[in-house]
Image 1 (spheres, rainbow, N blue to C red):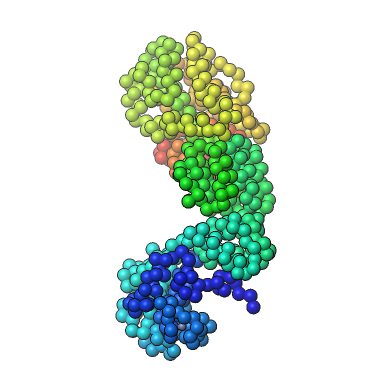
Image 2 (cartoon, rainbow, N blue to C red):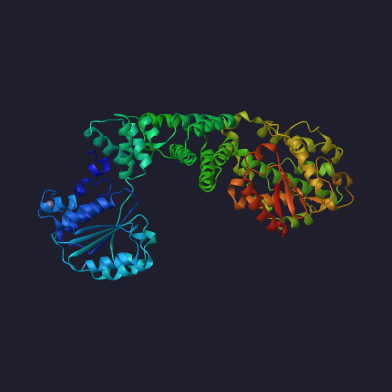
Length: 614
Ligand SMILES: [Zn+2]
């Protein structure tokens, strides 16, 4: 009869239990010296050896010829316990026997003396599953059990146990087993089973098992049932992982900022039934390795893998900056959280990949919006005070990363600034250069270029009107905005001038909030132009208020970050209509969008609105 590996290779003495020396040494010592407690609590994640140690303990305390604290595994009692004929060792699964009646039964039973063994040993697994009355019933027995009774309570979730139970037990914490420990043991076992197991494959199994020997052996079992020669590919297939080559491909695509390639790899994985959540975990693990490679002198101590794999990882990691890796880990952590909660797992994964390819869509444009809004405010303040516009503006604009409040700003605007926390919360520009020198984004010059070129349109010496007509809206966000209904994909690089112009349009849609825009003396500013929804009953939300709502929504739900970039909104009745640039619209989760934008709008506007995405 075939016995599964983890039963067949279950350790029979304390010395064979791997990875828990702190526990096994103490237990063997107590048995040897006969200093037993009456109740033990074994805690630790699954497959770390809790039940195994409980069984060895039960045998050792009853063994007729114990050896140095270990059971002999030869005597009648040891053999009887193994075969289940000695009834004094009671294993109970609290998950299925969690009621107060089960415990009452147990309480009555403990009073009988053991039939064959010296001690009656109760092993209660998953003890945290007991109901509260059951715990209370157990307490009394735990407090003063008869001399011939020992309790071993085992749990994976010790925080769910009442303090009264904890205080009555001697506690042992089982640690996750080191992956290298597991891998070594797997190789030994495979050898004894006459099967070939690559060390790489053993390491991969160990990593998937996440510190649990039982899971590792089960996975090895599954691998062996399909092949005598277990390689990394066998393990990947058995564990439902994608072929690991995909990960390197994906990293190359991310390094190149190649969104299309990333999405096509994801599509292939999807077709191959790869689990999205698992992919996220793999990606996080990969970036974690990168981070270790970049920050630690001897990464081989912390990364489980062969020397060859480590070299490959190092080469792959070289394409990313440390800042990018941290950014990526943040995006993926958020995505894996969202993936667990959503039905649209694939979309979450796609959004994460897009964000990873284009970090500037995540933060920089938000920051840029804030900066442009600040610029508008400065202009407005200058106009309000009747200063000659162009010459006064020019010196204020080129200071790229200085505080958004220029020196020339009049006192009125400066105090308004204090009431306006919005821009203090915006990511400071100083934090962003990492993405500028990251190699992946070298092929995206429009971001660097127009940023430096930003002041150019403002230098137009004559009038603000000239600023607005500076460049025809031939492409970029302005054109997309105008064509918001079309499905045409637009890969136009970021166009700062168009963005400025667009922003100008948004601002002119909303004369109410900006202090200067309310001045009747500025007709050229207040004239609506562009794609403003000027129908009756509809009133636009001005750019700054909208930015505030967007930031509020992003703060409530991080995956929204970047999705509402370049959107605008207007109010019609009790509905806020959002109009947005086509590309992101495809990837947005409308439920989340409505929920969090609605909350943010209520906070900002003080009224409940429905949210619609036009
Ligand atoms: Zn024995």
